Image (cartoon, rainbow, N blue to C red; front, side):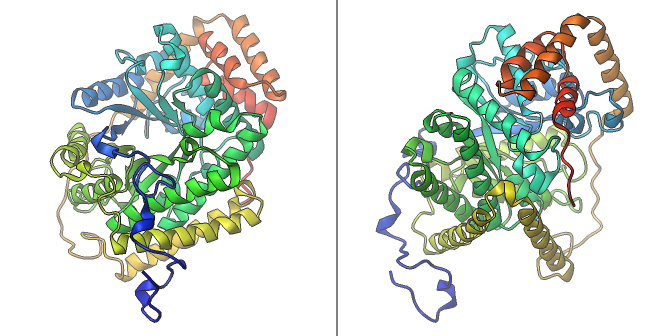
Length: 515
């Protein structure tokens, strides 16, 4: 098929582009059509519902609720103090304990969180970045206590600190020591947890902050390249860590653009890994988790969100995701109710069992429009990545990426306010319909209870041993030793997340956002 000059529909197509014979097959490099030959005919995507709120006991109850209804993987949301490295009784944690996720201070909390769950059978994803090594240390310590061999543990830690500087803000330390923690975790898992995905390079938060689909691909993959470089610089063999890199993307409302985005991301990553690093096919596969777009949910007419989530989930499936979280329709109002969470899971199950879309690998492959959109997003993403490379890579392009996201978010908001971008129930088809928000926990009482339990936990520790363990953490932080083994030893002897984080703050300082 040749380009048709003068037809604006063809603008942006790369020279030599075609929609037919050069597409290849699913499971073949460059994996445009999917990372596995049979895709969902061989294995369904993992239905991994994101949950975490209040205490470890409450969150554990929600996990059992979801597992009993057919979810196939856990996904942990942590509260802001846990994400920022503060114990629940710290002054900085006041008013935030348990509000947007579960509070995890110590190994006692992690034991409660995972009570009654077979860690050798269920995979667990933890959305955690600055404190990812500490949470993985706690998870590993609990698995050790349960007698689960480390080589049987399956799951993911997000561990993507660059996107925190770019889009989200839950960073702690300066960039360089933060990247050292990322590569420490990757090295530890390569040796000890071979089935663990050591990093989930996240475009989700970049998109939720306001980026376009093409920017989401560009910034995410550029961050991925930075992590590969740091791991190689640490002396980790490419084939020991690259197959365990995973990605995390958003699914928004433009169905076909989102499908094309996922296909383009796979193709760009495969070509980068082979061309720049000489990776094997196994290391060129871009495996990814998808979450439906939280920023697209509306507090107005919240039942409309059921439709939005269905369209977005369909985009993830048609685009070839490996796991999927579907948001609850009432999340724009509060933490999702049990009924909304169950309906979100049922949405995935209906797509898998009733819609027929799981019976085909890349069912939209070869569609002229989808291939055109795939090529367009690839071109835009590659051009943006070239600009980032010219700035020395992602670590040197944080301000550029942040500014580009701000500009895109501003343009989007102007379109909504002008009515040129329709949001049903917000700027068109408005009504006075109301919906009662799900009840929220009594957060003040929860915070007091969490602090009291933490005080009781501390009172039973060996203070001298805790001091010695923290000394070992600081010594390793000041040298080149991998921090994961000393963190695991520390949490087993009762050292808390906040105490480890404070020790690292004392050694490395904190990131001073210049803006």
